[in-house]
Length: 52
Image 1 (cartoon, one colour):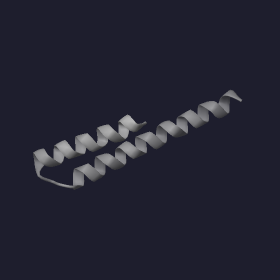
Image 2 (tube, helix red, strand yellow):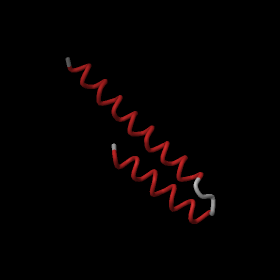
Image 3 (cartoon, helix red, strand yellow):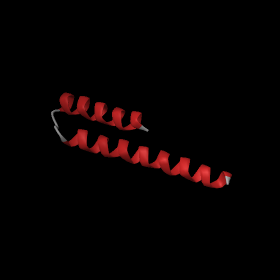
Image 4 (cartoon, helix red, strand yellow):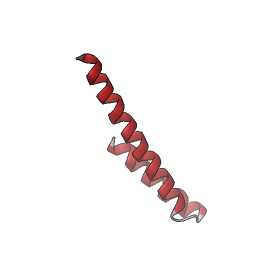
C-alpha cells in the first residue's frame, strides 16, 4: 500500500522535473497512488468479510 503512494510520488516528481510541469504531475500521480492504496484496503476488507 505504501509502495503505491511512493511510486506515484517518485514518478510524478521525475516527470515534473523532466517536463517542467511542477507540481501538477506530482499531485496527479500522488492522488493516483493514494487511490490505489485505498482500493487495496477495500479489497482486503472485502476478502476478510467474505471469509467470515
